[in-house]
Image (cartoon, rainbow, N blue to C red; front, side, top):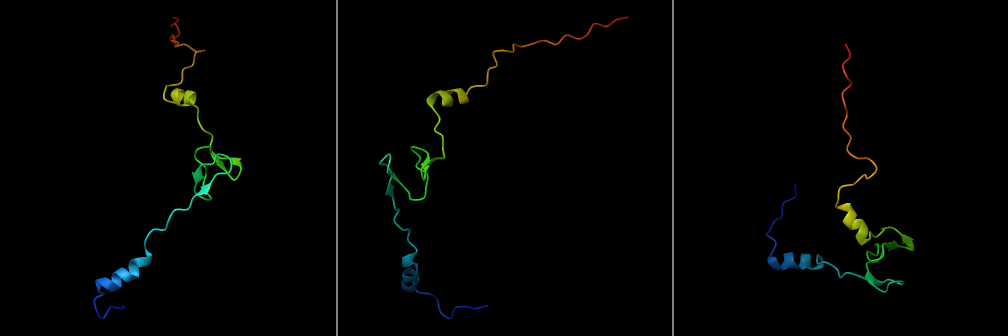
Length: 87
């Protein structure tokens, strides 16, 4: 196994790490909405990617109904009666 002959100095260590920084984020302006978005990513405001609808935005009505338990108005609570015992 290779073992370093000398301890790496902080200067050499920091010079090696000088290219490890995070790059700047690139943004492209959306042609239809005019909002900034990352290239090759879905536009979250519209749900579109390359001219196709990928994400369908939920309306406020759908969000409110989602939190409630489903209600079936056609069927009411039914009781099941045991069959009468015949002797």
